[in-house]
Image (cartoon, rainbow, N blue to C red; front, side, top):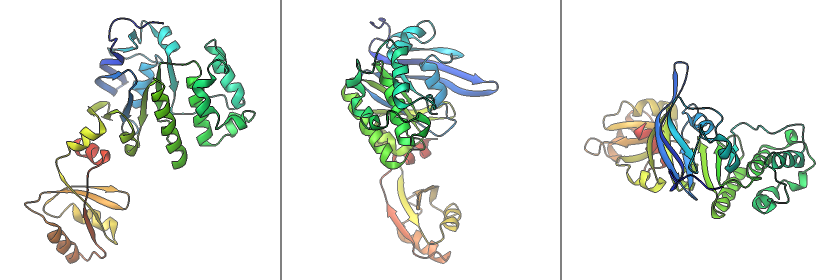
Amino acid sequence: MEAKNNCQLSIVNCQLICKSYGTVQALKSLSFDVQEGELFGIIGPDGAGKTTLFRILTTLITADSGTATVNGFDVVNDYKQIRRIAGYMPGRFSLYQDMTVEENLTFFASVFGTTIRENYALIEDIYKHIEPFKNRRAGKLSGGMKQKLALSCALIHKPTVLFLDEPTTGVDPVSRKEFWEMLRRLKQQGVTILVSTPYMDEATLCDRIALIRDGQFLKIDTPRQIISQFAEILWAVSSDRMSKLYADLHHIQGVKSCFTFGNTHHITIDPEKLTVNQLQNRLDELIHTNVEIQPIEATIEDCFMAIS
């Protein structure tokens, strides 16, 4: 099936997409495009609008205004064609819990008029991890295996573009790593992938990303470019009294911002008003012990906090 001529250089193209639920504006004039073969990440917290956007692009709901195409097909007028060429893995496990692994995969293959055998080569790298459990009910699988089954079902009809809505949420770190390795291999096979995630550390695994908050894109670029544009001086600070440290840092002259990152607080500072020694002395006066102050490079999460 050939794509239409419009937007033929972009697998996904959105222009000024808006969507509201009652008085809540979920998406606010979103525009972006995804190129063929690209691994594109939409990064943001829960409630930012990621799922709403994916449901519009997979023709499950319609936007209030704006236009969107997938492989040149309009998401409203050409929804049947899009459903044949797109694979969708929703954030919530939505396969049939009482059916076995093999029964689920067979069912989804039959819906698209194909078989497991016909497209096995595409899913083999993923399915081989759960094939030993093919007779186990889907509801009895672990989180990581459910994830692999859902991805296999999304791929069984050989889609040209794959939409993955927070696929690694609630999954253990090992399964998360395995999943991203699978995505890289799918990309090498020519599949265009859109993936959403609240995990900022996954952003660097994408070719390009869009940072989203409250239904708006804050920035779209490569992870490296976004990090390179971080212009602030950044320090990681810790002590034996982290809660008090957080409060105290907000009241120290020269500290411009302060956010908690794991076991440290990341602060941006005004170098004309604060040095490492001055901060150390001030924290000593405030009776902090085992203080560590370390200049660091920014991460995507630092960038997100700075521009949001």
